[in-house]
Amino acid sequence: MTIRYDNRVAIVTGAGGGLGRAYALELAKRGAKVVVNDLGGTRDGSGSSLDAAQQVVDEITAAGGEAIANGASVTDAAAVEKMVALVKERWGRIDILINNAGILRDRTFVKMSLDDFRTVIDVHLMGSVICTKAVWETMREQAYGRVLMTTSSTGLYGNFGQANYGAAKLGLVGLMKTLTLEGAKYNVKVNTVAPVAATRMTEDLMPPEMLAKMGPETVVPAALYLVSEDAPANAIVNAGAGGFERSYVTLTRGIHVGADEMTPETIAARWDEISDRTGEIVPDTGAAQGAMALGGMR
Ligand code: NAI
Image 1 (cartoon, protein in one colour):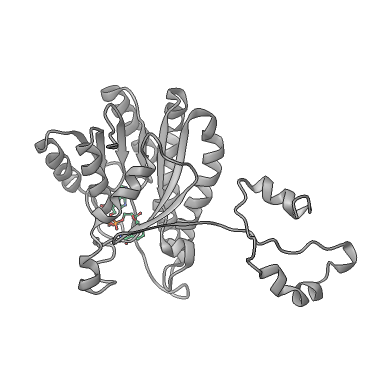
Image 2 (cartoon, helix red, strand yellow):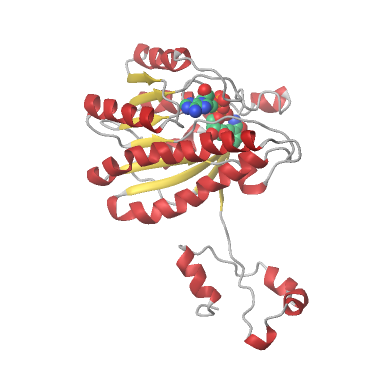
C-alpha cells in the first residue's frame, strides 16, 4: 500500500537544504501541503535568508505540489507562533511537524565556550520545544498529530568534540518519551529519527566515497514512515545509506538487596551482575522503572 499524505499539512523546520529539503519534497510529492521553514544561515547558525526555503518551495510547486516558505528561527517563539497562525489561517490544520533544524559548534569541551554550548542547546532542544509547543494544542484538538524529533548517533552514543550537540540531541529523546505519554490519548504520536547523511553538516567529516552512498534520500523512508497515519510511537529509528535500525534505552535486571547490603562494596562486588544484559528490558515509562527499583518486578 502506498503511503500518502493527502489533506495533511506538514511543517518541516530547517527544510531549505539537506535532510529537511528531502523530507519536504517527498511529503509534497505524496500529497501533503508543506511549510518549508528555514532560517537560511550558515552551518554554525549565523546569518539568515529566505532564499533556500523559497527554492525548495519553487521545486515543489513546479512539480505540482503545494508549499509555502517561512523564515522563522525555531528559537524565536513569537515568530514560530506567527508561522503556525498563518498556516492555520491558510490550510486550517497542522498534522505533521518535523523538528529538523540544526547547527553545529564543534570543539572539545575544554575549548567550548558556554555560549557555544547554549546556542546549540537553544537551536536543537529549545527550537524543537518551541515548535512542538506551538502546534501541540492544535494537534490535540484535531485528535491527530505526528511529531518527529531529530537525534543523532552523537546524542545516543557520543562523539569526540560534540558535547553541546550530544547533550541537546539526547534531550530530544527525553522530550519524545514524555510527549508520547501525554499525546497518546489524543492520537498525537511522537518519534525520533537518528539520521546519517551527506549534507553540508557532514560534508567535511567523511570521505567522498562514503558520502556518495548516503544522500539525504536514504533517510527519507524512515522519517516519512514515522510521520505517517500508521506511525508507531516512542521509537528511535537510525537511518542512512540503506541501513534502518532501532535504538533503545534499556534496563538490566540488576540486583535487589536489603538494607544491610546497601554499601559501595556490594556494588563493587556485584558489578558484573548489575551490568549483565541478560533479560534486559525497555520500561514503558519512568514510573515502571521506579516500580522495578522498588523490587516489584524483579
Ligand atoms: P543542514 O545544515 O543541511 O540542515 C539544517 C538546516 O537547518 C539548515 O538549512 C539551516 O539553515 C537550518 N537551521 C539552522 N538553524 C535554524 C533555526 N534557528 N531556525 C530554522 N532553521 C534553522 O544539515 P542536515 O544534515 O540536513 O541536518 C538536519 C538535522 O539532522 C539536524 O538536526 C542535524 O543535527 C541532524 N543530523 C544530521 C546528521 C547527518 O549525518 N547529516 C547526523 C545526525 C543528525
